[in-house]
Image (cartoon, rainbow, N blue to C red; front, side, top):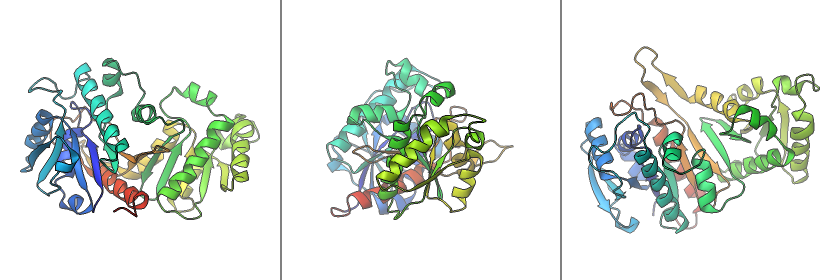
Length: 345
């Protein structure tokens, strides 16, 4: 038995449907798992047209009906879109509602043990909020609908991993959120992530918040008042970490193999190095040559992995999106499922 994954289509106005179709054009995926797409016929059918694909669609109402056969996309049709009811590249209430409902259905399937995990396509936060669902991203939605108090975003590209203390908040607010309890909780989640990926005796590095990690409070005090006490508290639990390490060097050291995971203090501190490590752009032509990397939510009762990029409205509907990150997300989900469900698969 191979793991079964619910794959959400993402925002229909973005590249989500296209990268799902392209990823499921790779036969190796069906050798690893049984993918079931949560989405809409009209968007998936149009994505097949855009990609020039010869894949066929198999609508099912229950995961147990999935064929799991290469060449066929098994999907659950939520019927939220009609032909020509949405436009590519545009923020809309309709697409926001659709992308939200895809996520909600996938979570229900995972909590009900119908699937082994959830792989999510990119969403547009503005569209979701326009539809009346006031969340700042996937992580907040997943936390609420799974009843999870402590969870965190982990980005990975190659051997570089970054777990975040704060994410989708203004930078000024992020600084105020660097507290002992929040940093300590994220360090614990870093250890949980290492366990999930089978990393024994993980080398966890904690980044500083300020330049030079504050340099004895010359450039800031959060290291002394929050980060160092959190590291010491984690040590009492047997979680060994190194830090705070100046943020301008910690990721370089991690990418070289010195550390297994970095605890990043805010969104861009962790995102920039991971995306620089995994994305390669053909500057003159615009499309990405390589889009490597994934986003995992650590601390949930379910497996959730996502692509490490957004809706890419600028190229949506053109058939040129790169499916690399979606492939990575599915493969990462398989790795996690094979660890979590090793006695069942």
